[in-house]
Length: 199
Length: 195
Figure 1: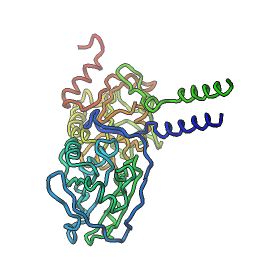
Figure 2: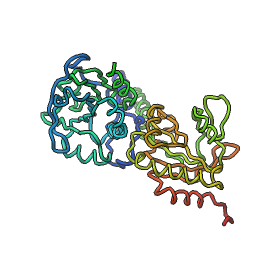
Figure 3: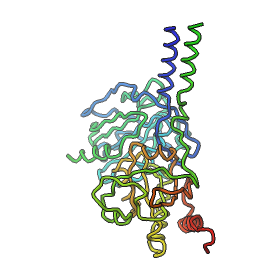
Figure 4: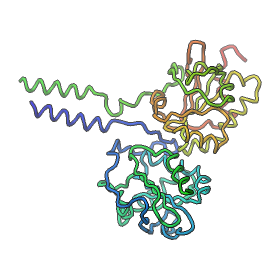
């Protein structure tokens, strides 16, 4: 009997965790969005800290260029926006929001690099639905999630956390947000972090 | 036997739980349905209070208190590319109604930014220079009551003295041009016998 109760409780917990949760998605993606269900909010251990030099990397962009973080050293503040996966609900509505606040980034002499572990063709198809993005979108596909791993935000299932890093012109990490993967970080948190760069 | 029946009871109990889809998939109100009674925070700006015909120092108001016969509700998100592209057309719709003396007092528009914070709604308002009132629904409360629709989604409903009336239009997607949309709404609100 105990076994039956245990089985029931286990099923109950699994299914409760998988129950649908509210996240909007734009009709721009129509029925193409895959809902992975609710995931463990965070599932990795950071390998970088505030005040440290940001690990350098070079990644291919969907434009065909390669982008190296250190190329902006001395010129621009850089925001890294890691999103877990293309074609999923929260991620699909995150970068289009950043797409309408280019002026806020410019005001803080900052640029944005969008990064995911998806491959270039998937990222290309996905971001086409978002309109014309003003910022580069980089693929951390191969070696799989190597940059996410370097920053300590690669999850066991091979996707990155939903994470934001603000790196100043000296290459120093000034803001880190590893947000609940199931939710979108409020825009004001990031803009306040950019504001603090002036201090 | 005892074990079996207890296990069966547990199984039945399990399958009687709301399923993943059933739990959140409340159907959105459609044409001729009654629109749910929803409350919104009182707008801060006097212009918006005037536009909606609201007064008093309450923190919130019920949508049936909006002084209008017909209410257009745009469900949007600052993060939604379609909503961004549609914003100038919805502004045109608002202007067309405001500039028409016969319609200005009887058709009003509001927007509800679902999953958006007040700050994010404000970013959207400033970016697209939106003059009609926008409200934030950061915790998806209204979103869930309205059937968790994709964005943008437009509801048009009548407002009566007794509460929100019936839905006369409910569609996913854009408005297909401000002029077309207004004509459609006027057609739908026309009483039999009207010319």
